[in-house]
Image (cartoon, rainbow, N blue to C red; front, side):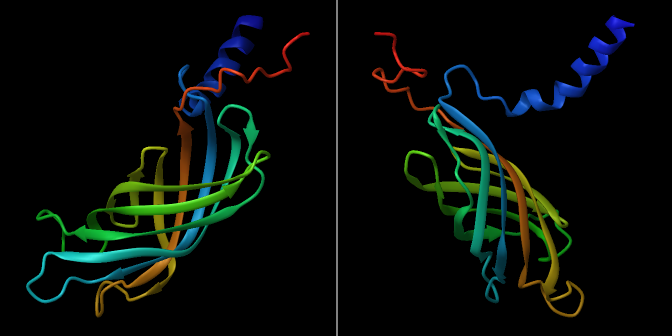
Length: 181
């Protein structure tokens, strides 16, 4: 009986192991990101369109830099370009893109501001993205502007889940809890 309970608990916690930062990481957390994403279709004859997320909110739970707790939601914006891969079924929600994201969030130490390069792939209404600190999945959800049938999708709700991991070496003078006297 005990072995069965241990096995079930072990299997139940297995999905959580992917969000634990590596040994050299100095912080990590789970983040939810929401905002409005806008797509500007490529001009006639052009191969790249533009995307942007604004306004957006990022809300993380966990530790930043090993000892600062995330302390509420912050702002999230982004912009860049996308192309429609040749295997796509038109320009509606089949994108490969890149750009820059700019986000801020409060911690128990101070406010953090990060600006990072970002890549994404979107097929249908779901996709994946990565920055040096964030890795996650996202959905493009209603309310939509455009319908992909009579007019292209130009605006939608952006909803993402991501893991934030920082890999900076810890401060050698920091010891939590306080160093013994």
